[in-house]
Amino acid sequence: MKCDYCEMRNTEILYEDDEVVVAIKDTALTPGQITVFPKEHHTILEMVPDSILRKCSLIANKVSIAIFESMGCQGTNIIAQNGISAGQLVPHFALEVIPRRENDDLNFQWQPKKLMEDEMDAAFNSLKEAASDIYVDENQKKRKSTVKLQDQENQMIVEKEGKDNYLLKSIKRLP
Ligand SMILES: [Zn+2]
Figure 1: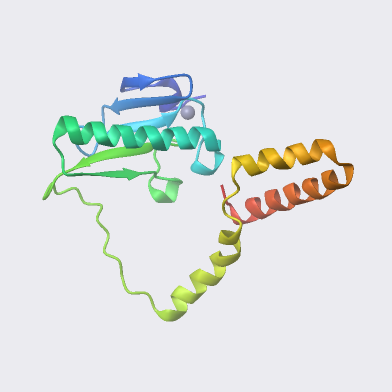
Figure 2: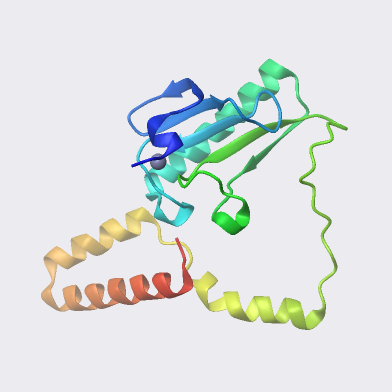
């Protein structure tokens, strides 16, 4: 597969283990920008397994702290360009940690606009149902699978729930 991150092209590796890579690329918004990505190829955020995503986030935080301490910057932006329309260039999920200083002229500050009431209501109504089921704890999943082994009747319910959740997630493109 031709993927810059899988092949680790044009990068200097700062850290890697069997799951996550931390690298400096030869193209950046500003020197000190650091890219954190899963070693395994996952195109976008919703494909990244929870445990890997958690590790990427924790490492991005450590990287951000390292940037503060070693480069004397005053802030960091930690962003994911998730999908082509969001500016994603490499088809491999990554978090970018970008050092910021006052008046550094990096231009990705957007100006929030005041929403019309009906725009806000429409967004709220579209997302409300999806958001009510947005987080399933991994321990809860484990408990569900224990139940599955113990009880035939529960097994059917659990499987149905699992299927519904999967469909809901697929339709609503939840991670
Ligand atoms: Zn890749």
